[in-house]
Image (cartoon, rainbow, N blue to C red; front, top):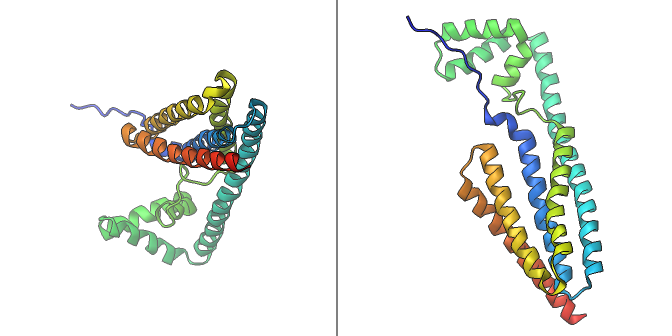
Length: 233
């Protein structure tokens, strides 16, 4: 006689809220701060000015990321709450049609009509709004918008990412600063791409190449602009 073994499963989709904000924040922190440092350094500025620009970029960027994430995800949350309110009113005033609507969703997925109605009735008797939110609206607990979590994750990740190229300004001599910051930042981006891919269960090589390529392009363009303006001014 076989025994049923119940084992817990951790699905990676539960990480999507904070992981997206953290990877975006860290990537933006590395790229924007390194680009800012390279642009100022390429203009033949003294190390003091480069440090001031880097620190200012870190603080301003972290606050901007936090505010942007909070506003953006709050808008998503507002939309979700509006859908919840609309669905709650429908369930209160049109329970039978809502039950049939839920049943038809299961029929479309391949469940027999009679069984679909039975499943819909049982789910609605337990938590009708949750059943419709999940199967009709496509809003699950794991995917639900969390503005504060996204804001903190993004700001913290940006600060950590920005601190890495800024640290290179302290360690590298001024005449080699552009080369050291560029190389170190690309290495940091590659590491970020690999860590983000592993955390999200994606392919490491593709994610690493994608992050480093666009980061290198951004840094090269900014350094070129700094060089041009430094020569002109």
